[in-house]
Amino acid sequence: MTMSNKPVVHFGVFCALLLPVCGYVPSPTNVSVVCHNFVNVLYWNYSNPTEQLKFSVNIDPYMSESQTADTFQTYLDISSYSRDASDDYSVSVTAHDGQEKSKSVSITFTYSKDFFDESKHKYKCSLDFPPVNASVHKDTIEVSFQHPFLLHKQSILNEEFGYTITHNEQKVSNSCFEDEDLCIVDFPFNQSATGECVQLKFEGEIAGILSYTYRNVCVPQQTPETSQAGLLAALLGGGTVMLFIFMGIVWLFWRKWSKIPPKPEFLCRSPGQFNTMLVSPHESTVSPVAPQGHTPLLKEDSFSYGSPPISPTEKDCKANTILNDTVVDLPEEVSEEDVNDDNSEGFCRSSDYDSPKFLQEMSPGDITEGYGPRPPVL
Image 1 (cartoon, rainbow, N blue to C red):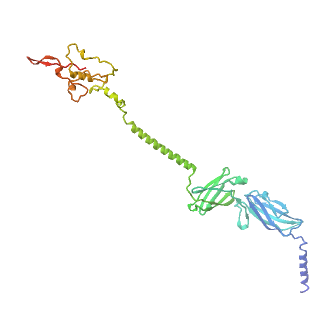
Image 2 (image 1 turned 60 degrees about the vertical axis):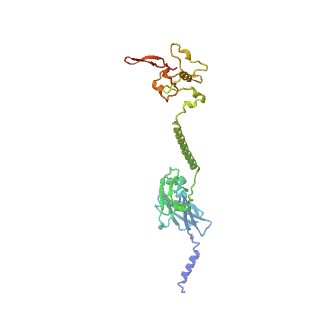
């Protein structure tokens, strides 16, 4: 080594020894941010802490003025400095040791999809999808959840919330507003999923902020179930049908019975009353029944006004008109045809020879003796 090179080496060693004394402060490392559900916390590491060490954090929004915060910790909650979820933020951290400071290390983050760019290694903040309730029905899965505004109370979320539910190749899209109590949608599922658990993916967007979640829903085996309401309805329906059938049968029997003629009056009489009636073939009027011991108005010896004596045949006929002490009136006039009718019952026939004789002209000048009409039978 020549003499000219020795001064250079000595100067390098001298500078290396004097470097810590000259006030060199290392920069923070591993700067990152966790931004989730509008809670934004900044983290970093530092390898050479001292008693006078502090950190300065600068928050620089894209659409508003920047702000600065100091801390002695290696993290800082910057949520109050980044409330506008639709903005884009650049954050830098600088270490201070006394009067000396290190170089700044910066990162960027955003909630809005409009500012996100993966090529710039920007942190993408997340917003949880609202908690999902699911109930399985016959062919659908009913899902319901609250609007994000009701959960986070951020003014930026006071608008329409659009969402999509996906399972394999099936997809259902819908939207709801903050004034609705619940966002409800029915998601159809294949019968092949019966008895298995399916995973539903939920993706939502509101004010340019994306959210997503997954939910496993188990579809039970479809077994025939009879609820109490269904059983009661079946019993009521069956009872109503049976009641109508019974009423129809009663109605048919009533119609049949109503066509049967009433029982004849003579069948209602006692057996002893049948021999007290004498019915005339031509007259249905029956005289009142006389009380016991009543004497007939006409007697055998009452024909004293020149009428011929009553024959034994007429006596029998007259006697037959009194049955069981009952007097029955006979018709006033009986035709000769009725008297001669062999089929007539209840009338007595008398001989023409019982009539008185009188002269009768058979032909001019020829007079003979004959019998006149017989006296009436009483």
